[in-house]
Amino acid sequence: MISLEDYVASFGEEPGYLNFAAEGPPGRAVKDEQYAQMSLLGRARFGTIDSLFEQGDRVRDAVAALTGFARTQVIFQPSTSIGLMHAMFGLTGGVAMSPAEFPSITYAAVRAAEAIGAVTPIWLETDHGRVTPGNLRSQLDGSVAAVAVSLVDFRTGYLADLEGIRQVIGDRLLIVDAIQGFAPYELADVVVAGGQKWVRAGWGTGFMALSDRAAATIVPVVSGFSATESGLLPLDEVQAPKAGVDAFQISNPDYIAEARFAAALEEIAEVGVTEINTSIRDKVTRIIDLADEFAIPVVSPREVAERAGIVVIEPRADQLTVLTASLFNHGVTTTMRDGKVRLAPHVSTDEETFEMLRSSFVSFATAITV
Image (tube, rainbow, N blue to C red):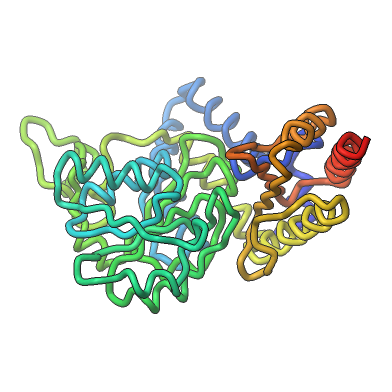
């Protein structure tokens, strides 16, 4: 086991970084894995490169340990968007989603509808972008075959109630974009996540997990030579795709990316998702308290059950430039969008970062009262 303190100590991002909802800087385990595997490949010593081909099994085990899916229900994907494209292009019927979802969901659905016509996007009315069991219930009809939602809404920071949504939608497929954290994913039928944000494994990493029902329902429209039943390079003929989630591959994966992703997930499993989530939520509370101290409106959820690792603040329109300039001048990295500022901590967000954020708020408060 790895203690939370040791896990935190393995990261080395500069103080002031509060943009983990966009990119999560990797830690020592991932960087060491990258170096070790690349060195192995670079030397090409007799008999050693074959170990790279074992990384797919390592990823399956690591994802299974954290999601509740069986290892046979998991496949590596290079990004959330690729996995969602696989899912949407293979579906038939209506897929209900918020138009405010991260574009990985909406673009996959619309592109599939335009290209094939088997899937129909059904645009939900939401509570300020939040998909809840309550607002879903009245909008479901016989045309809805699946519901797609993000675990954490990237704009509002709202943490979806997967259990409530599961109960409301019945036997429809539940598709979840899981890039912003881990939850009881066994409630879902399709779970897709990239590894460059919450997992901190870098770009080009991710997974797709399918329940048995989803694997039997979703057609592998884009399935390449690495996904055939024989498991061998299919020369001189085009073979049928494998059964289940294994069909959703196009070519051989980036084995070093698989190793990076597995290393990050294995470390998370040793520390514990609950411990990591608790640490992040404590840091979210501190950011909310700081915003309240300086009377900066917080528009993301305050209830612990409704929030994850994102705080969204929204100053008056005439004060936005002053706030963003104050953050920039104090070296605080954030995302600004649609008149709001998104602050996203992680376990390694340190005291110096909080002091930098406080100083930026002091500068902001001073400037708007002069």
